[in-house]
Length: 497
Image (tube, rainbow, N blue to C red):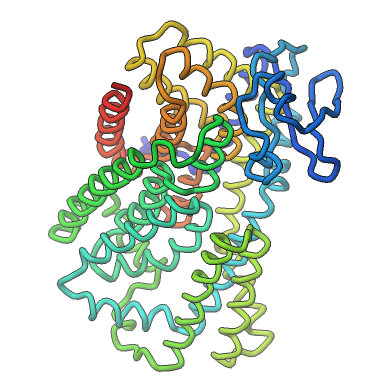
């Protein structure tokens, strides 16, 4: 009898989509009215199932709708997505999704996620060009010699830097570019691919979970809750430091064990396969890191620096990020004197290597579309907001942590979760006499913790790049997840007293 294999990321997501399709037949349909600001006409647009009406963009309008958010948050563009209006939930005629909707969902998701999909494909093309130049192999060989005996610094440095990106501007989707680049470095340092994956994914995950000035979570959630984003900042900084230290120590412990005895690796059976996939061989040790290859590596690195600066200070998003990597590939081709025909061929090959990852992102987005079309997302939010009535504040705070963890399965977008849930959830803090910043914290921590294993987040896409099964990841991450969960629950409980 053959040993059963854990299904691929694509199959897992299709199975989840099937479950969600069934849920649209079982969960009652319903929707909150929403409010959006129209800068062109300087009015609010109130959308309900029946009609849309224009309202004056004034503080009085917000107060009449029981929305405790300063008008400036809308007019300044801080809140740019439609928000849910409290106490407007209505049950609607059920819209169960059938087999045709299930079949269409991945296609709709791919179209809806085209921005990140093109980013991933262009990054794949850039990596294809880099592999052609030999800069990666020579650079890895140079780094292996330079870090010999100090490989643990690599773990600390990568995890910390990516966490800084996560906590400041929500570095998440952009990390897809780092896996093909950094995994070979970790393999060359005699670690396994899980160590590299953990440093990148957990760095981003912990950073965004404990966001401090991240405009896509902390700031937008605080705005939607009607408080200043600096309220509760000290607690988030403490949580960032504590959770990051726990995570780094956990990775270092596993990495040390693998380095001492490679058979202790959770993916030891894939060792040769992964080393071949990422080009780790003895020949690379003899490559010379010439000045031309150094210049190529510099241009490659600057592509990421330019992307980070653009996202942080110039309001760049996926179009600008993708363009940056495309231009970087072209400049590298000129420096390496690659022929036009060869450039096109290798660029397309590189993009093709990440096509499966792009499909995973699209299928995951399709699951969200299924829930929206089936009108069950707001129903889940409505019932979740009523479960906490009458709770003691310590129990309430931790219960909200789990509610947000569960909601993130249905709404994996941090900004989308913030604008949809904060106007509904933040007033609940007033009923148990705690600050609304605590709701913002439970939103961030709940989403962040579940993000580490959430199949509708980026973990399956990341695993697909490094060819590691979801079951292997769960074996690695669950002890750490438990540690972080206990730490978070204790911290939240202390914070409300």
